[in-house]
Length: 73
Image (cartoon, rainbow, N blue to C red):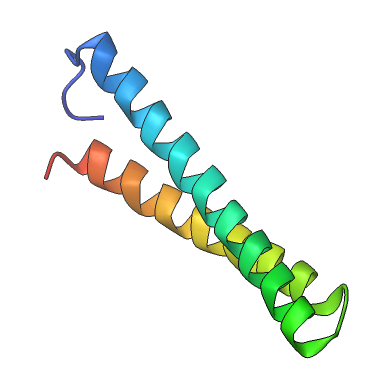
């Protein structure tokens, strides 16, 4: 952490961004997997796959956001 004089609102903004990225990517994965299951008639397969892919994408975006926040770019 290079700059220790960050405003508390910046930390709240970082938490809000992380929460929305994680929740949004998981929800998109769930709904797209559910849609693919209904379309292809393969009930839990794409739902689970979409959940895992959404979670992986959310964690990747979270790590990118935290790295960007602390690098000072």
